[in-house]
Length: 590
Image: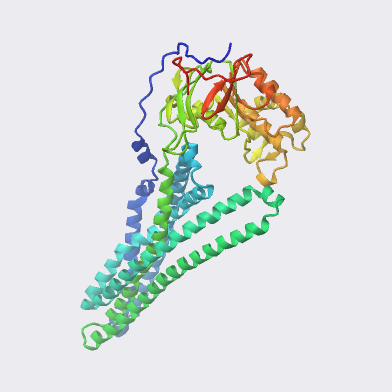
């Protein structure tokens, strides 16, 4: 039987489940900074309240010492005050320790949950969306999680919790010194205005630094990934010059950020000291006029410094917030990536392997000319189809469409009469195996790579490796199947062996459809013969689509097609030239 160009009676399409709306999925997967924090926020507020009330102990003790104990020589009362303030200091330290433990737990939980959700969203994104930006950009986005965590569940959070209690200190100053409270209030107003102005400058500097760091990290990834080519062509000097320019830009951006941060922190220290000095100066005049006692002045001076401490820490939070706001925007960019499919889609059941393309067209450039157009083909279960074409004709793209990794701009791709987008793409790939030209290995043992890190599949993996002729080769290695691979530049296995390991991994789940994309590239003649034998054994058991130029593989096919000008043209048996493809409706494809 040969691959058909006209449709046969297709089984009725199964009803498609109604998935959750895309907007709902977005909202559900957004990083929720406050969901975990909300569980302990009431306790944190109560602890902060008691801590700040205990902080009032020392100024009040000074008031009593200067106004009552020293004039009256009441040493017994002084001893009681010493014990009281000692207990208050110990209790305050314990409360600080407990509060730090709680925020540490919140941070760890947030980082774990959000980090897992972010990586899941990256893995669920369509390939073209994932590859639209460099790996360095995605790494920076995931790295932004640490900055967000430190802000929302670290010392920044504690500083924000302490900030409202500055009003309590100012209120006590008003009770003790009356209009003297205007001194720290005035300095506080000036301080806040300068902090807002510096915050905008710092935010712009941080944005420039992040953009430069993105380019630098992308460059490092490219250099490390192409280390063999770089050394073979003696390009070290050129790469060093490029990196020096990137590092120079990064250093300048870092210097600008450091200068803005140092200015902000220097202002905080200045205003804290200025508040105490101004309070002493203004308060001394009030004391001389007998409007306030010396003890009240001492307490107000200490409270003035204390009142600016939360403000000073808040300034540090404000400067860090400029970094966190950009980091949060980067982290949210991960969750803004559209998932490959809607949640809740079913898995194909009892797959036979009938593959069909109906009026399929596809192009990478939106609004541009399509790379593939008017594709109509039916491959019955167990049949073998060969596809040949020039480089850049779209063969790999066609297989990506057949696997469900890409979605057609128009038309449908069906498996057993049901559109591929009806199914969950991750479950669908258990039934459709894609064998690429250059299979990638992951850091781990050979057995880990074949079993996809599933120890239960060890025996089946060895059988699959033996079928591809890997048994004697792996047995000759000192560590056998436990040999570590996936180290890129440090890889010791030849390219052809790594490719066969990747093929064994793809065939291990016993798929019903195998898409072969010149997967014998780089494999020697013995390995090529083993792979051909495996494909011949699969013929009849599963549907095969072979993209290849090798006549030995094309002879296996029940029908061979040439891909050119975006269309498929079959090679008729017994003739030397191609003929137009008949459409599903029986017409002629242009």
